[in-house]
Image (cartoon, rainbow, N blue to C red; front, side, top):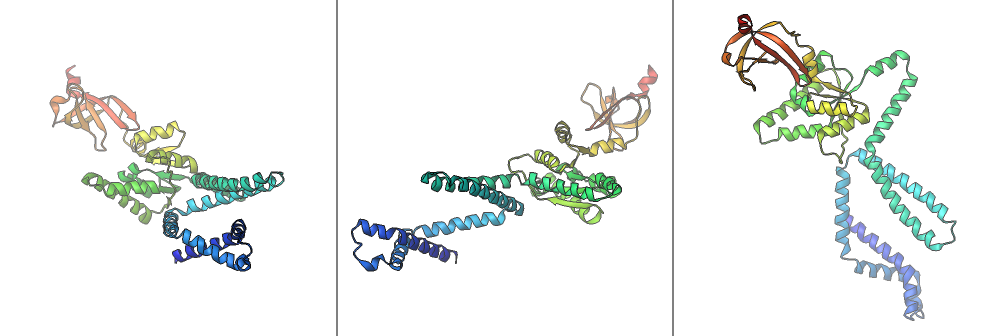
Length: 365
């Protein structure tokens, strides 16, 4: 069907060109005395036949090109097509307005050629700008909608709306799994945003040939399924993407800036990047550290030394919540339960570390 349409188009173009140029060609060949050839119908028929035969080899090429463009349009997201089309229309309107002003100039070449060039150029630029700036435009429209909504609400409703925020989950916090329990307890309010590029990364991990990575990816997908189906919290999928950015962490920071969202993570490096770029971040590790029992220097603990530490004669033990304890001169007690005295506590976003020394040594001193 598409091939027939292209052939009919070629015939139509050939007939139009025949009506315009065949009389001039006959005049050049000194054949204008043949009256029946100069009739528009005959010229159109001759032009259609000549043009179709001359471009017969182009039909398949044009059909294949149209199919390629069709496949790309079908696969493209709706937002890309919508904002690209809006940009194209805006560019064509500007080109039309400039073309009207150029008609006043007494230069035929400028009047005929420049408007065509401007139409192609501004139409292309409008489509590209609308397509690549879609995320900024979506954010602008959403912000405008919120501002209009706030003007129509009461003061109490405004306060409730302000308390609600967008929480953007990254890959590490989904795989970690604790985010589901936090949402279930109600400590995380607002709307959960799951970007499409994070889902793609999770799927890529779940399809990995490495068993450990595959299990981590599948666990992350199970956690998302639990959040959507079992927990009473609003979840939205952000289908946009930033094709000019390769790293998922950079895309998360960009998205957080666009929608004024909060990144939820347990990645120490992403936490620092968000702080440097002025993006609000919630670190699950910080929350876990905040609810751990407070251990002060001088307190006594009974721990089991598991392994030796990095420094000479150090031993390493762990509390029930996973907090690491570095025991000075504890290497000789590996595999034993001993009483230790806390000397200092180091608190970071990566976790809490406790330094201690055996109580037996303290008594000996």
